[in-house]
Length: 302
Image (cartoon, rainbow, N blue to C red):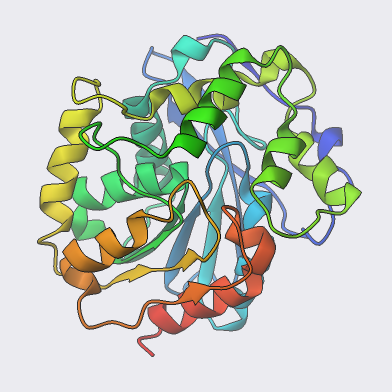
């Protein structure tokens, strides 16, 4: 597998992101290894909260959430998915599969970091990966937070705004990463923040990950990932783990999933689920501190 690595100087002067990068190697599935990056905040012996981002962001998205979790006495761990952030970037779109992303993230969280009793927070693709991990390895997880995400099986049509996004990614001769992130926010991103989202991608050849992920979302029942996702639904809906649905009030892509998750997830029953006002798809940008406080209270059992 041919991979690229973003030069570290691209990440100089990141606004409000003082966290030092850490790295671990995971098997690439072809006999080699990939370097995955992550950042931490809080005491290393505290309860771990695993923060998984989505398309086309990276751990920078969770900077405000991390601050709240650390202040609450938790260990916040924000991962850069393979192909994003400081993690290695397979050069071919075909190198990216749903199953591989689940396994790469599993290898980092379990084999490299040895995490246990995890509270997993998944937004966008972070939920597609995190919910699968929780279903396939429930013994590792203490709690689950779904934030503007879902677990599609292809059995129910996805909303039209998602199809427009997928088409725009497929057809764009150049991917404007910062523009896509801005389109998913209610607030206007300052230029240094936009630059931070562009930082991992110095050229189009570094963008196979962002190019690939929309096409990996199951849209038909025959999708290769559909059976595993259906099985995950069966596990999660009977799993006795606290489940928090923390969606924004302004996400046209995943908003319809919130009432479904609250209704069918056993661990969501009888719980007050926050609706975060004034936030779009990337609620970590629009209301990261508020989201962080909700996650901290949930993790602390309050």
